[in-house]
Image (cartoon, rainbow, N blue to C red; front, side, top):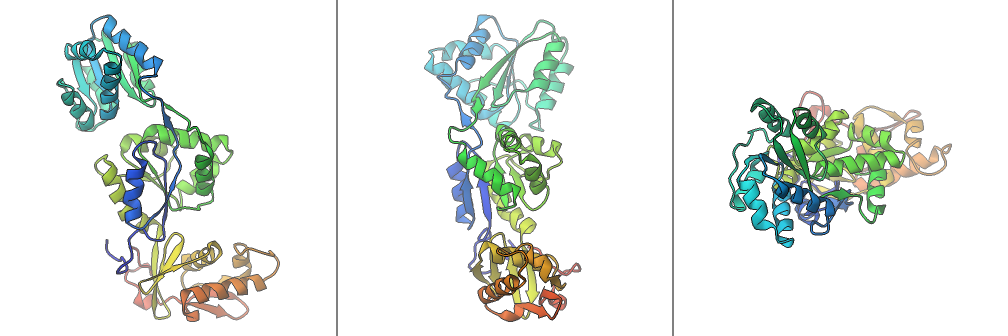
Length: 386
């Protein structure tokens, strides 16, 4: 990545929340290797397949009469369905029933799972979109009386199920890997609180159910509006793919997502995009100052800062070269809200941490400014983005 300080990892100084229930360590480790501080807070819990009576009932409905069409929406879900059938001694019956039907795969992972089970898909869209699968079904002809099994993954697909039902089909919803709230809700509550006050830089989501659970929990905590505002502003929502991103986008929340819906690609996207969205590099008093999530980098050296010092540096760097009044800085300085001396003490601590007091200039009777040097900036708007 262009602009990285030598020897400093690209995510050093940034905090990323991970909401995944599965493979969270894999994603978290990939981010930690690039320097991130990772906060784990599962937003969902998976219901064990073999114990899921709803999945067993749906499977037996599929075996009760010939299926006409089977829709596989996810690779892990389709594999889980076959694995559950194996635990019940129904594998041969289920794969035979699916093999006699037209099998539609929503994307490459579902296609791979179908083939790994010794089956073959009839059709798969290039877009990996459930809506395109639905359009294909509707365009394929008369669905009256057709028995269609739709393999779900966590969340229902009401648009597809209702539309097929209105077209006269008998739709069997196969709820593989149902999600419920995590047994311990405390980490999720804390993560939501941190997002609401922009206390971290990004939150990663690997499934649509996790997004739905996260937003629902935020609303139940009474901070849904603050969380959405933060995600529209300083906190980056990172999603593994378009299905996961859809709920945020409906709320007008911008997301970053990789071109390919893979965990490794999501980690790389965070590495590339979070510093660009959340970081700033500025020339000041002969130094290069990088402002990161909870740290600064001065001339290539990481400078850990307290939350109070970080808040002051952000305020000054948001308006580089402009004077920020003592009264404005007092609002974000801990302590007596009427004592401007607290600002002087806080600025002094920030100067000491940065290593050169000239980086923060005092403007007599007015306030403080970052000693910004626009003539050294590398682009027209006066800031260096990386």
